[in-house]
Length: 168
Image 1 (cartoon, one colour):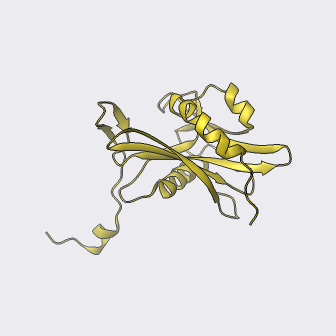
Image 2 (cartoon, helix red, strand yellow):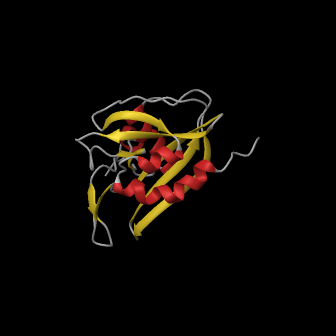
């Protein structure tokens, strides 16, 4: 079959549920990824979280922006794409990758949470998935009603957030 150039340039969406090798059904045909944004302030780091809407899984809880990866997309690319869709354009100055945590419950699915530093606070509810956006200290995060997946990842993410960035 002959494929046109426009067909080659289209990315196949990863939206959809799949039954993983461990028997659980999860969102993201090619896996999923999310991003925790960090701003270093005088009193210490703060992180951006989004309050998930009632239209989203575990609505009313707080988590990082994220979602299904598209075919051929890296977790870094996918997490930043999803964040742009859910909480808006990133601030000028770019991002600095601080680390990541991989949740790999099955041989054919994973959720990668990346932690990136940005230069300033930003974010708004951009679509039906997000009710609110907030910036929180690591201690504040501990007191929020968290999405179960994010709650499980937070003990691994917090040390990345709290480790001072090397000066470059």
